[in-house]
Image (cartoon, rainbow, N blue to C red; front, side):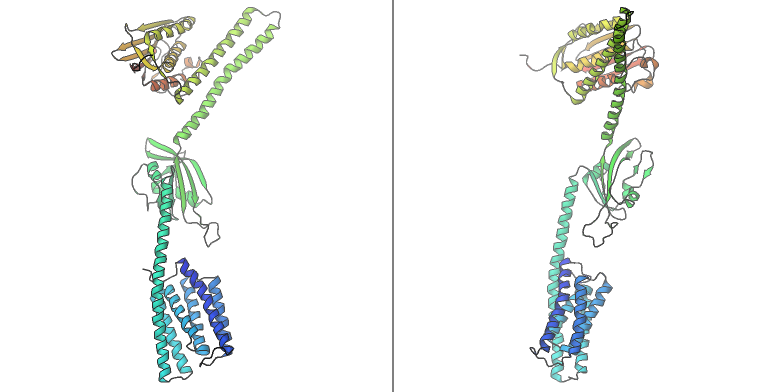
Length: 546
């Protein structure tokens, strides 16, 4: 229940502003009618007093209309002025007349609204005081006159109480409507932010969290309530140097929107994410202050950009590596062909000289084609394109691979062996993925084997097939074995650097093995060769063959 006090209800304050200007006008008009002889009263009417009190009453009413009270002291002084002027009218101009009675009931209501019961008592006491002064000043002490004034005071009090009770009911409904509207607005805001994918925090001027959404709990990996907690205690961020960042200090220094994507949030010592955070002061379009620094707290919007930034870094690295690897063979091919073009116009050129140049250009062109094939295979594997399964004869596949790489092995003067089980079943997988995977491993084995052999092995044990590529090449150190399947990784071993490459081969192989549902394993010893094994359950085609 609304019990009066400082006026906070907007509609009530609006009505009182207009009333403060309307009643002086009504009283002034009443005084003019008396002076004109239209209305006759028994009280002595003083023209000078009428003009003086009318001027000051209109002055105070105008101030109240255009500049409402902003403090309790200001409200009290204005109410005191209204009471004194109304009392002046009562004593020196009208006496107890209808306008004065109506005016005093209004003053009693405003006093109650502004200062609760104390204000109402003040208004009643002031009325009693001025009525008493009026009686003794004009020496109208007859019993009937005093009784009439007393009844008037009682009537004003009773009428004022009835008006106040009505006002309290109106104020109660207005207050309830205001709370309902605010509650609905808050629910709407919460509903909106809870449906946002980004984490949203609203904090007050002291850095205390007041509103948050479900995405905030998900991002921070907690089920605990964030309400009433300090933002710096909940959001412990670090920068790229590992130094602690105070979000609240950043917000206090913010005059506009701040957006950062170089902050990190750690769940524990070994698990942290990269956060993009947007921060801004909350400003009101309806603020009575025109100062730009006036605001009501801060809003923070966060999102996990770990994967996006990782992909961005990988993309930049990919472009850098590929552009570097493409530049070398293209430059060699362009230079070689330019030399051949010049040599063709020279009379002393020999076929051997031309043959060497053409051979070098051919080798670089093959490398370019190999790189394009790797990029195409990587694109297909990452997008899941061309993964249609088909029935594959493993014995036939083994011989196809053998025939495809036999000449390349002979060129390097190494042996290419085929080791297969006596019985090999058919398997139902993507032929493209399986062939690209095996070809990648065989190509790597031949590339890094200077002497000895490379063995292609197909072994079946019950319902499991193991594909192995075994070489006697340079081998892989233990430190490199944990990294060889990473994108763009190439060993620092000088023997590896002798051969050109992008570092994509084994990354693609690992990607394809996952697509096939196979397990890719590596065993290697430096200077003793390497073995790459692919273990795959045999899945047969259950569809009827047309």
